[in-house]
Length: 637
Ligand SMILES: *[C@@H]1O[C@H](CO)[C@@H](O)[C@H](O)[C@H]1NC(C)=O
Ligand SMILES: *[C@@H]1O[C@H](CO)[C@@H](O)[C@H](O)[C@H]1NC(C)=O
Ligand SMILES: *[C@@H]1O[C@H](CO)[C@@H](O)[C@H](O)[C@H]1NC(C)=O
Ligand SMILES: [Ca+2]
Ligand SMILES: [Ca+2]
Ligand SMILES: [Zn+2]
Image (cartoon, rainbow, N blue to C red; front, side):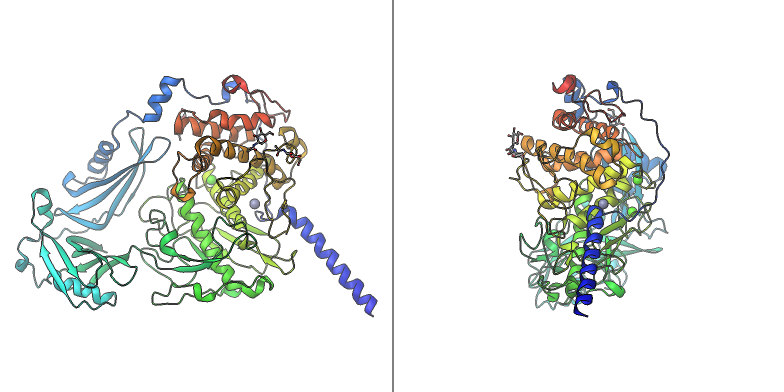
């Protein structure tokens, strides 16, 4: 009996190991995919297809910027002629250069000279043309111009003092003292009526207040808009109080108070660094998530749901926050990693929520925005299709030893599943190797960006689906693993924690050292498995990354300072994804990287990008035949 029992156990164990082995290669995989892509004849990789940097003189002019029509003037013409708003009805608030010659212009609506706080148009302008725009301008009936300079003439109006008290009570504060001072008016500003400065014990600083409109369906409501930085909480409110009724019509807390106990991005695994309490206010990027991670314009949630993702544990259970704002998730505490992963499911869901949002906010800085087809419920009038926040299943029960990400076209909700890894003892959860959820999120990014956000069938050939694995590994490494002092000749693994193996689960670890990772163009000849193909692509990207960090230094990736090597790398990768053709060959993708750098900087990183390709057989005369070519070419020789 005992013997039988034992051999049955042994069999079970072997079976498990076999499973783990097969899954080990496909770990952090896109779902088992069925795809069929007609073969494209790659016969046109002539030297002249490789982008080259412009001659020095042109480079200088190009990098300084275009002399084409002023985007502000283009925007004004578009607003007045296409959209038929007279110049008196809008004000251009910001003109922001994007990359590739694109400029974003942000416009606020004026009615009767008064700003409509939720009436915005953003225009993306390139080569003197409006490429895309978002529009939330009010079109309903116009109220007559209120006589703001005569307070008493406003029908049944509340004083600024009463409005401030109403706002205070709305946020649960009782001011003991409120002093209102009307500011002296000069020039144009007086058109929008007087402004006030309010001092109160509940506010940390003086509260500026002015008249605005809030559009609410077919109504335009005159409000006092006030910015209240609270004295005793972290909140900093932008509140809008109805001048007639004193009701709070709209309010936004500029500070997100949410708190999470997580393994911070930048830590390889719980074996290399601690979990910490993170304050939402310190990680949320307001340009990417204007209402924080738990709210859209219309709704808010006190569980792992929000603008960018909705994270569910098995049986559709969700971790709920606590505290006065319901957004403190730290009460769930830390996982006990000495136990099996199913003993900390809720913590894992919180970790996944943090990671999905982090990936959203970070990728936003590099151009994965609304227009580019990113994943958001509410696009805040910035173009693209919304209602496609990532639906994320933590510790999904329908699999193990893996993770996946399914990407439909822009406007349809992507789904990611993270599984428990049974190959370790105790079992582990891939969300605690942040590279893994980042890898999955990057699948969504590369699918949306390649061939435009509406076409998500552009990474389905052997080479392009392989590259998609490569981009995903590299995104995970760059965001979570590489540090300022990382040695390019060292070995970097993927899945080191979930496989409990420092070399990870790929065919070779990543390294500039050819003795550690010998892959070349010719290695691809017999490869069909996407992850194996991906390692060939990614090992080159890793070398480009290290070249750029060596040349331009290392900065905070979230700050997206493109003069720093790591940020420059990520920006070039994101731009290239947008530039490359559908189902690219690796040589197409190489050329897109070179093109992105030429477009962005005039080609200042040309050889940092080209030489790692030449080193591994994708040199100057390489063509579609999988024969290694190591020529450095005329520019980098
Ligand atoms: C990049 O530059 C090339 C040629 O200089 C141009 O054809 C292409 O449109 C540019 N792409 C973008 C997105 O700017
Ligand atoms: C990595 O190895 C190469 C030789 O293979 C060497 O030239 C280079 O200096 C090394 N880099 C570092 C940072 O040690
Ligand atoms: C490259 O890897 C080999 C094999 O691991 C090792 O002996 C060699 O020292 C490495 N070279 C560098 C420059 O790190
Ligand atoms: Ca979208
Ligand atoms: Ca696409
Ligand atoms: Zn993958």
